[in-house]
Image (cartoon, rainbow, N blue to C red; front, side):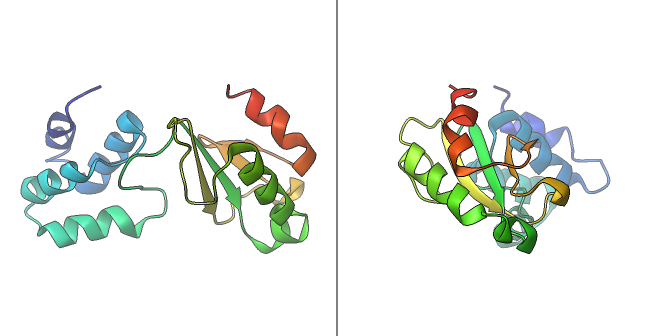
Length: 148
């Protein structure tokens, strides 16, 4: 893994540099390390509160450790009507965690997402941004097996 100070420094002179830095950190670590927020604040001349505000404003960014596999389920109306609640229950049951949590082994994190633009085949989950369309509760064990 790269040093987050180096990653942030590489974005110092880019337009939207702090956002670019947070994207780069998230690509590298799968989250934004909390210590990196202070470094970002210094690098971009912001208060720590402002740097934290940017990191938490965008739903794509997550501060603090997350699992290797980020499973997000769309919570928009079409997915809800198509059975997203049953898919959520299956995910929570299979993984032994609730939405917003990470498994003890650090492998899986469950999160809600807004519409992911795949309304033709609901419900939809994404695993590390790869969409899985028309998911059913019964199909969850097979989908998770692909991650193991």
